[in-house]
Amino acid sequence: MRIAMVTDYYLPTLGGVQTVIKAHREELERDGHDVLVFAPLSAPSSDPAVVRLPTARGFAPDGYPFTWTPSGAAAFLQDELRRRAVDVVHVHTEMFAALAGFEAARASGIPIVQTMHGRIDVYTRSVLPLPSVTTALLAGMHRRRMSHERARVDVTSSYTRTRTARRMWRLMVSQANHADRVIVPSAHFAEKLLAQGVDTPITVLSNGLEASVLDDIGEPVARTVAPGEHLQVMWCGRLSPEKRPEVFLDAVARVPGVVAHLYGDGISRGAVSRWAAGGADGRVHVHGPVPQSEVLAAMRRAHVLVSSSLDFDNQPMVLLEAIASGLPVIVTDPDLAETLPPGGGIVTPTPDAAGLAVALARLRDDPAEVTRLSAAAVAHRPQVAQTTHRAALVGVYEAALATVR
Image (cartoon, rainbow, N blue to C red; front, side, top):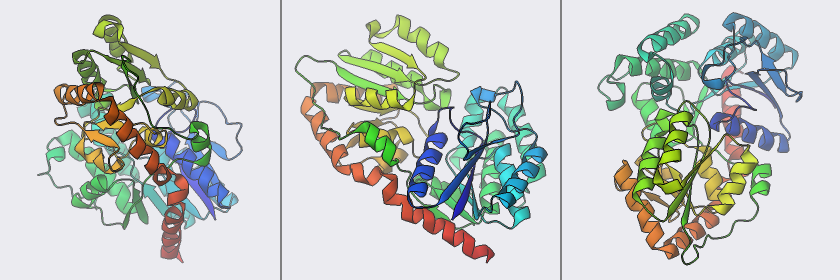
């Protein structure tokens, strides 16, 4: 089978979507399939299987290259799909590269699988300037290329109370309903999509880590905290409001005996760096954006990883990397509990800094619990391997192909 992955974000930019696509590609190729990746890139790729879509010059919102024009990208992609005899188009995002993927696939009679990776209603609210204006422009441009008539958003939901949120939910629901099959990595997000009117068949399919990443991690060992040693706590992700790094920083400041390391970049990096320079007695270290190999090395040194986002993340890849590393995980969002191994993580009693501080102090004061949680993560490692989920992914592709035969 030949699969075209179409995305608005790809390597060398950093993020969960990019990591998922890399994992899918590597595991599918190991299984004998051909995989092409179509994405906007700041420069042509040296990888012949990564194809650059028409890309805007001098315009990179939030640091990401941007597909432009949509019509040019759709025409280019349609030619490429036919020339390369693609069987299935797998779309991973909701911006203009994604729209080009839908347009080109439909014109070519190729089935479409859409993965819904996350909450763009929260992302746009947190990242875009003047979100009430910019989301209206984005939704309008999306609607001109893809009908929103099949989106019937439930306005009574807690997360659709604002006009801005409803715009983005209509966009997400519309795109899902134009696909032949939808993949969602978590049950909690699938439930929201169903509640908001997605009627395309949905498969809840966990993300996974490719063999090369598992090899880089190596064989994990249960963590131990030596007597008198500070608890080494790691935070990794986009430094942006929807990830709530300030909640993590506030919690660390409340708990002596904890040393924190933050990895990532984003619009909040300046504020985080200024806070770290003057707060928590020098116990916070901001490392900025680093390659995945450095993140994995940092996980081997850490005692615990913290996710401080709330009502945003679907299934963060960094949680899977931590589990594969044998690293216990603390989450502040109860929805993310489904990703944690049995006995291998903690959900904070409350999602605020006070609740996170309670969890950090608990581990600081009980090193044996760190080891118990870590041992559970080590035992769960096979469940986060992409190999475990490959057959189900191929099954979704085969189901999509059956719809157009």
